Image (cartoon, rainbow, N blue to C red; front, side):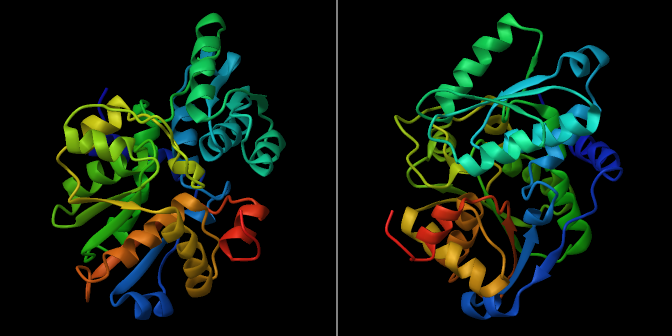
Length: 321
């Protein structure tokens, strides 16, 4: 498995048929607070409200007739499943999604609205993933891993390609990392096109499997991934993102639950956009690094907006979790 900048350029040509480029805005109030030119890449403006749709459409566009006929199976906390459900509907295919039992009910309902079949299983994402993988071996459904899929990485890497085209003079970019597909695509694109750019990955301190793996130089896992940022909540690091990211990130930042909670509020106040937990991680890292980024042109990737009402009310201080 590998992904090159040529793969991302090819994915870009495919996605032009389905998606318009997302906005990249410099937000004055956010810039004033952080002390640098803060540009936000609004992946939350995509049809499913998150960046992963880029990967889902790229994957389905490259699938053969057999796989399209039988459909796909995957596990998710939300956005990976939304991406596949949206793409499956576009291509007239089936989509079966496993979610943990405590999953965001609003995301479950939205996936079902796109036509996905939902199965609740296990205590967390990885439990659901193991069961989806097992079922895929006994049925004709094509299993779609959340990260070990070159087409997904190439598709989401088009985000960074758009940034390079729109703001080639940027100094740094801050990218949230759960499974690491978006960070991987960003590294592949920007190391080829804008090698001077500082690339900063962000993980939740309570779900640091990828950060720990990159620091150790080998794949590791954690006992839990207890974070409200569903997009970051994985106990494992995965082979393809690990291989693409090893030695390529300039920095990896861990952010706390409270820092992400505060960042949800800051994103809303300064950009008037809702940030789900994973997106808030990028804003939290920006605040944490504001000293070293002072005076720079920095892109914060707003990866998604798919939070539920109760989490948003909690983040805004309307009640305690």
